[in-house]
Amino acid sequence: MALAAAQTRSVLFIKRKYLHALRKTCLWFSTNDTILADQRKPPPKTHLRKSQKKTTLTDLSWEERLSDVVTPLWRLSYDEQLELKLKHQERILSQLSGYLSGELQSQSSLPVRTKLSFPVLPVLPSPVRDGYRNKSTFSVNRGVDGNPKTVGFYVGTGKKGNIVCVNGDHLLNMPEMHTRVARCYQDFIRLSSLEPCLLFHTGGHWREVTVRTNAEGHTMAIVYFHPQTLTPEEVAVHKAELLDYFTRGPGSVCQLHSLFFQESAMTRCTHEQSPYQLLHGQPHIYEELLGFKFRISADAFFQVNQAAAEVLYSTVRQLCIPNPEEGRERTQFGGTLLDVCCGTGAIGIITSPRVDRIIGIELIEQAVEDARHNAALNNVLNCEFIPGKAEVALPGVMSQLSSAGAGGGPLAAVVNPARAGLHYRVVRALRNQPNIRRLVYVSCKPDGDAMRNFRELCCSPDPMKKLTGEAFSPTLAVPVDMFPHTPHCELVLLFER
Image 1: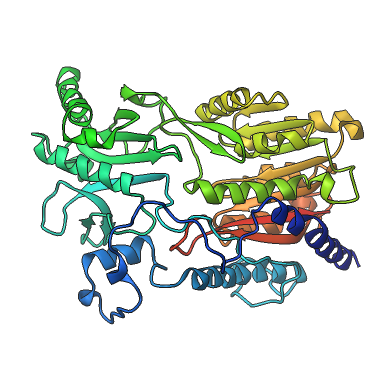
Image 2: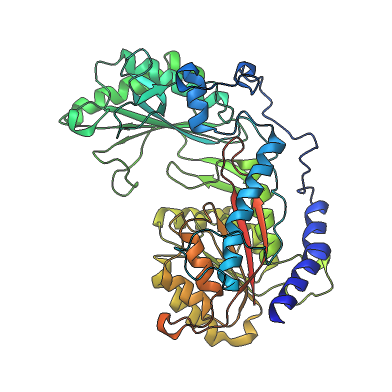
């Protein structure tokens, strides 16, 4: 009876609030409508379309091989891509339905297609299909011609020892400015007296380059460098050459808004471990989402598709705190939104006009600093951002909210974790907080560890796992296509109790 009631509420929610709200804000896109594409004239790509069917890898050009790696769905029409993604999400979510119905007893069970017990909406398409990426990282390695100073993307794997670096100019998801910076960086390192760093233990210095852009056309480039045994004075000489090339030399065609340099002996490191050195321009670029402005620093997380991010965040906002003007119930307006894994605060800040209070929790201190800055930048005064591990900070926050009692208004939660999903202590704290009646989970990989989180949120109370709170039920799933021409999309899953 409870499940049937939940399903009935979901259908009413879709009809009365969700769909109407999205249509009203012009975010409900039809895949048959004309969708805005990158305004630039793309490089010739018709020769890479599906009229050319290849049967063996050796028959494919290097450009086609790279397209198959980076944008595997490039041969399909966009409607076909969305259909494929929807079927994939339905297969994943049918497993969740199977777990909840008892047809699948464990996550290790063989996949069984079970009838979905909650609605899955069609995939919301990206408003921009081509050239949509606002962040790209280009690697350095041996190219098709054997030149080790080639900048692009990998075909092959290091494990098999068959890596070939191929320029990405033809890739459908790549904006022209990104490939222009990559080409200039390639020209620069080929002029440099230093060797590229292909493997850390074999020496070399020049590593990958990351390019970030915004809708205004501002471009940030971040060059990664392995110092090996060079002295600081020797490194300074090559930094000066890099700066000169991109500001006064041939690279000035890129018109960089920011040029950063990070020297590190590690594959990846934070600003705290090895500071990003600003060689030229401004320390940040800015981007707008749904009328709010956000600061983007060199290592800040930001959705790679700005136009689709507006669709995603509008969907999340509407599911977390439905606009009271769109329905009869006004009691859901106000209260508190708990934003777990909040990053630079985008979801909380965008949702802030609908609630009395936002509490964000984020592991990375630089992201918390950016979140606080973004709140101040937008004159948002009801956001609080807490640095630290969610599994450590959340129980204290839950205790504080519990002591506030029902007088604090409705309590909703949104979680947007990395692919590894939520720590079990975070799930436990959310599950055992009775005042949370609505929880929105955003996942880029729902068939991974996130599925474990879904089961723990929805399973029967289990004292052994300290999951004593009332179970949630999935009531609505909304896939959002953030990554056209790839198999991936974001899944927004609403849980209620």
